[in-house]
Image (tube, rainbow, N blue to C red; front, top):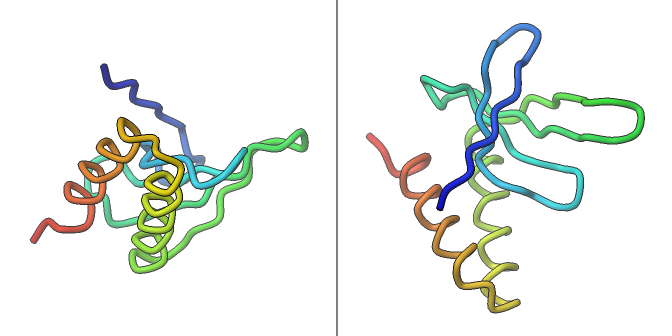
Length: 91
């Protein structure tokens, strides 16, 4: 079962969640082009969007994959592998 999460950016519109980066920090991308990436902090002060480059976003996903693999969370690792391939290995 796949649960998709969306967030509305004030300028760029609908974003989808690529993955959790760490507690209260998630990576989002523009819904259609998947070319703009945002690190989203969800704190008690509210939601903050930090634009990041494609290369940095890819590194964040790969780091998360390594951490998840080390902790033995195979299902999440498989999901991250799929997300990585779909998001960063397209032409």
